[in-house]
Amino acid sequence: MCKSGERIWRSVNCRWWNQIPGDVAKAIAAGASTVMIGSMLAGTDESPGMIMTRRGHRYKASRGMASLTANIERNKREGNDLTREDIEEYVAEGVEAAVPYRGKVREVLTQLVGGLQSGMSYSGAHSIEE
Image (cartoon, rainbow, N blue to C red; front, side):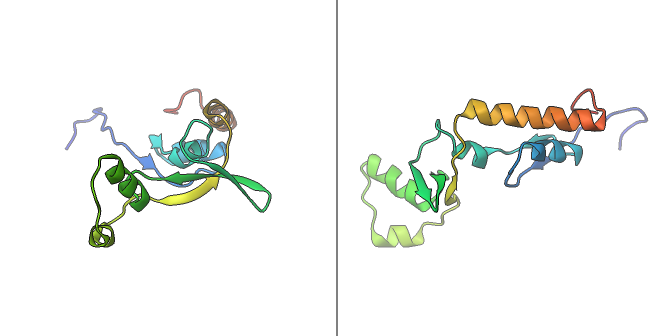
């Protein structure tokens, strides 16, 4: 229970595949206090993984650190021998995927900030809180 005038803070995290810069503004407008952009950054030059071309489009191989492949490679680096049973019993949490290649992190972040600023101007907001 809160007293009159007391502010209750809540945190809402928006987690979906952000496709365009305006998606961050939409998430904030819908009440999110944070957005996850890991998938967008996974396709950048600064992230690990090789760049590949499929049907004329460039992609980057991406994997979560709890994925099966990451677990196998980590165990190899640490000198652990994995049995077939170890691999079959491992419950992978991370995702392995080909994500769109996006260039440099700086370029992605510039686009996201621009999309947020644009969305704020359309709504007349002077701050993210508004």
